[in-house]
Length: 451
Image (cartoon, rainbow, N blue to C red; front, side, top):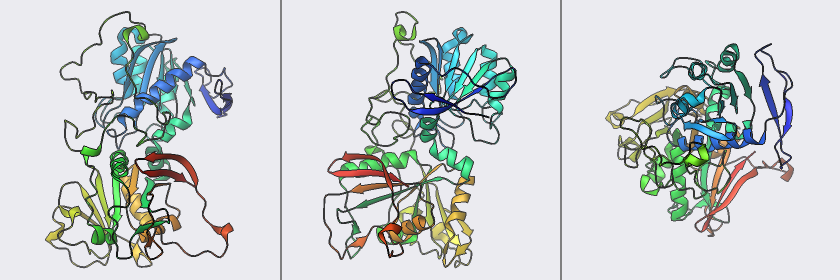
């Protein structure tokens, strides 16, 4: 394969365009994507964001079907086991899909899982062209969806807005390509870099708005991980509390495909779709798509439906978790990684799953634990722990991003530090992070940082 450099109109941003042709089934040079192509793919990416809280372990995918500038169908994948984005878009388009161009944020699947192959559905609908933002890293697909389309005489392209598409599904790509989840460490600190008083008191460093913002990040994660030290000190629940989870875009949660702070996605009118005048079609009985929330986003399971539960994970090598711990209450699925030489189990753990894994230097083998979580379908892992565990993750090179809340308070030099890391002898040896996103959340500042 060869990548053809292309320039995003009016921005100068360059990205690779990979084009597949039926004639040779290899990549050749081709015309750049048009402004219309970009607009439809951007729309598909915004649609995919609707599944931010609901699709795991599947990726978030959006689809637009269009004739030129006129959209005739669109949809997004909403939850595992439900139809994929292409199916919803084809249902909406009906016969108008014939001869149309399909814009989808991930390569159409080619295998039978919980649902039939989307590539076959597109072929049966008679579309003429399919543009995928990114290939599917799942070994069960891995280009086969595009090859199947090509074999049926459909022009298949990929690479348009590839980076935003991968960003939206960074956890899914991490699990498929690196065999471990995308690891996000969440921490809150004072202006002088402290996370708790010397006596361990830490409630609350950040404000109410920041704590509500954390719920969105928990909701988009597949699992929330902590250590036994934090369980002993803070007795956290590690659940998603929906009273704090509003779906209006307030600059919280994902900073992937959409513009930062952009307005909520609104449905197109019949005129904008090229359908003529008329009211929006009502949701039919039995339609698996969720009712929209106040901003047009589907409500995540839990708001008017069932509870949002994320897997709670505790690293507890010696099974020190006390009987009265919230993580043992059975309110959410819970997995405790214990050491292979841990003491006998008792009825404290009757409502959780215990898994023994190897240790290294007297600590749980974190890399081994991450690999096991990936096997269980964990895409994004949010770590909410103390300086020792978070420091160990940084020292092991296992942190993909740091979600840091900075409160406008000072705690003094006797308070506890942000991370436990080895000392340095030179500033040049310091670990440097880049700020991906910075914004105010109530009285606090929220930074998203990566190496």
